[in-house]
Image (cartoon, rainbow, N blue to C red; front, side, top):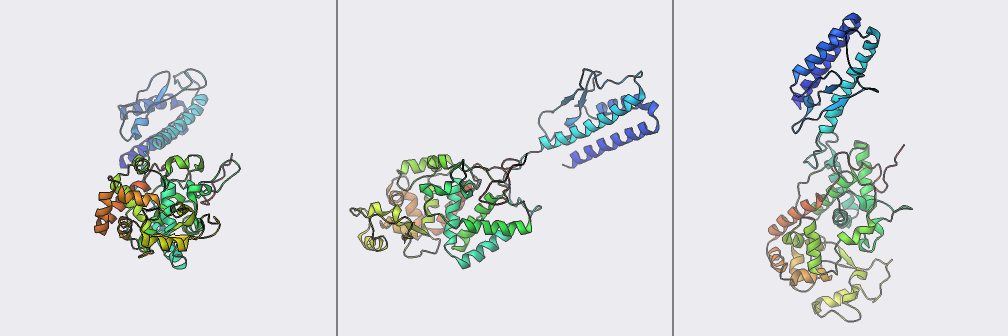
Length: 419
């Protein structure tokens, strides 16, 4: 970067000196222009000056890789030829135009060759250094008001990042042309999106138009895990927001709780998450709750014989109707013992046939996942380690970075495009 700045400064200084000479003695322009072009050619071995066109020195600012050269030509062939017989006034105007093009080329080449940094640690250290602190404090405040928000934040990251990209598409409302992911059956029971908007508003007061909704979604999930007693996971930032919901492909990417373990393993593997990572991420079922509409098929018309009989009575009490009212908030806590603590008790429960959903039962019985279930049931440290790894991979699934996407003004609506 320092070399680039020095070269740009040298280029600018040379251009200014030439223009100064031109303004002081127009008759000397022809000689000055010739010397300028030759000096530019001699100062960089990657630049060649031809009689019929000018190859601008983009290589001065190239940060490695092949040299990018641009050929600037006029409205007709030879528009930038310089000769002793040209009229001084014409050459003066062309000189100004030439140096303007040269300056534009330098800036343009620099912009095009500047690499997208992707996701990095502490992305907002210069643009909004307090961003992560603001998110952390907002999560603390919201958790004190409504402890269930922590479950929502944890579920948000999975439902957003698992569907092709971590781009906050989950948060977008439906429009006349697009159905929201929030309204799909697999998003049933998801709520509290308004709290993401509260965090966004707090950040907009500090750093308007800087922090993306996708970074808020990911970091609030991390902070939700911390509030529940789970690990504090270092995460990269720099995500940008998508402009459209992906409701039409949601089922293609998001595993269902009734799908086979082979299908679930395959969908997680597509995100780069291995078997222990899958087992660890499903450990999020240690907290939160399952709505009755998602588990009544294990109770009615007959009780699933694979369920622990001691647990069946509790489930029937919480879900007394074979066809629950979808608008009623009827649910069973995922973990009766420590429902508000992110711990490894979930694994002990499912080994004892107390898992609520079919995916819980499969996790404890499938030969590919059972060894890891047993290991995590014995060691919370191992569970936290594998969860942190898988959570990080999930949070970095195909993000939009650099100039892709946008920074939404409101998390539930894409920015308006002005012509």
